[in-house]
Length: 394
Image (cartoon, rainbow, N blue to C red; front, side, top):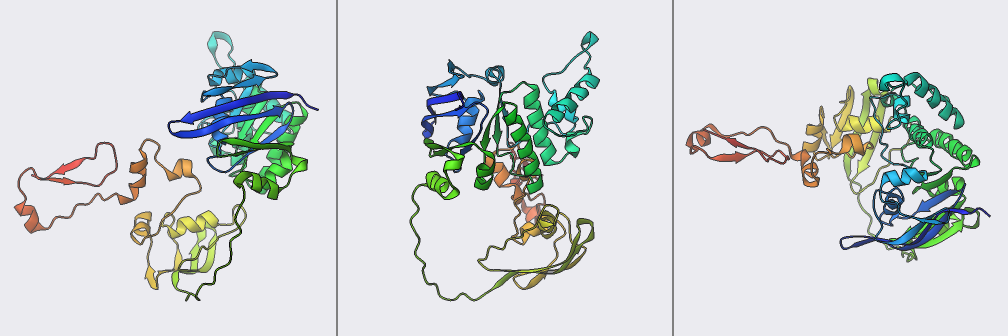
């Protein structure tokens, strides 16, 4: 029986009126891959950040190898050998793999100059430890998501981490890339590294973990050996009892076509003769493996990459979409898969992000009205930034 490397005793954390964690207690055994699961809002991220020293717990105690410890900062966590591989990877796209692996841990030679040759050699060694080959001089911005994940793991290993927390590491990976990552995790486990694996994908949890802890509404539900549980049991622990819905009869609904796509082509994106119909009140799934053209079709319909040929009909009327503004004016919205880089403006507030689709830079004023304007009258231009600039008409 493995000994615990990290024990949580009655951990609680409140944010204002929200109790994020309440009296959470469980242990993670040394050398295990331990799954942490729960619905959104269950408290997983809060517990991760407490473990990594990003948040401070309100009450409770953490024991590291049987000794009570206070982790009040990420520096304290690193000192113990705890690292977090975040879902949103904190890597620099303009730096090489080696530079990212040694970020904050630069090896220097005489006069404080970075010894890049040595760091590149050590980067190769770290990847070989994980059973992977790598070009240490390749820019991270040119790497796949899977290689970025492995680079983040390499950075953790370079920090001599003995306990690695992986937050939703497979969310953007293909099945093949997931298996590559799992091979690395199994190799690290065999070498004695402990991994806390956070995921919503229960089939992956069942495949890779030794034990599973379930959180619900900020409370610890149960910790079980993976071999002694099942996906239906895990779901029951995550959400509680689910009332069985009775099937209701509904009057037959007449199909009403909202969107029709005919022979859509975009050579540069590999789209050829795309045809489908979306009816009113339907949810239409677009499925395919990585590179099949799902994202490309979405960007084409939204005008990011206008089609070369084909017909798009909205409620029976042909429309021409050459840019996202025209798509928005037709009532079409687009939620990108790359939320961090393409979905939001980090420097803007929530309401400013929500209102970005309402940009209107043109102000049309009839000549007669313009002539009759009093000097100094203000007309507000709808630009969502902190200054809310106005236009003065003389």
